[in-house]
Image (cartoon, helix red, strand yellow):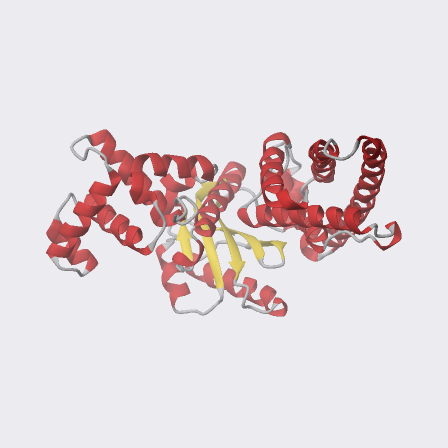
Length: 401
């Protein structure tokens, strides 16, 4: 089992994503989930191999961290436990196939031992995971922002909610015109400074938006928070970008569109979450501190299924969809060329390059792409794929061979 660890955990992770409802996570939570799955596997193999006493068995740190992060986000406990049991069942199913390689007299005792001892591992780890979840959930709700997070989750769920009670707890009016944003703080910022950075971002944005009433800031974990502002009709998002460029907050912001009433409160945050997914997929390539929904709307609408988007990009761009620095500047040159109505002169001016360089790059890019650039439908697909690469590479690219 240890020899097939990477392939097994990758297959199990994909199977769990398809079979378990309620675990639709953002990229950060997906990584925590994946790490939890891998460390659980390693711990199980270590326990079975070394005959460790049950009393000494401790749940892996990544599994407990994932349980706590889930509690902070109000993710139900049931899907987490189901994922744990599903992993156990799949582990046994695969491990039992190797028992047939043993001598006949060893097979039955080995099966009995495998089933009994793996069940003890699962029970002990599950007990510790549930305890960590419940303690964190209680702690989170008891904190100042915990109750707000609970009510925000209720409002965002779209189910019937007691609006007056929600407004009282949140101390924020749900009517009027809203702008929602997600803010997250760089890992380089010490944890004891994160809350101060959140407040700094809130004050900066409120001033630039000329917010009409109270703003609402609700932390979702140690380095991330949701923000809402009640704004008037003259608010302008462009001013926020300028303010962030001159301020060193160590934070990044994803903004939704302006929305009115309860539906606008929800829609603006949904848009902000999509923008955050696009920005996170692009990694450190885009260090713009503020990205708005209108900047990335077409890509954001496709960001919910990165695997399918990667296939689309590969089908449309062909060899141009490969990772690597050369392909990156070829894609960007072709994108600029198509945006500027295929003008070599305008593209050269925009990219501050010689016209001959642009011609060479465009020719290389078109050849690698392999599309018919006289076909308007093909050109539209190419532009869409290039825009996805612009924001979400390397997540949507093929790995280098």
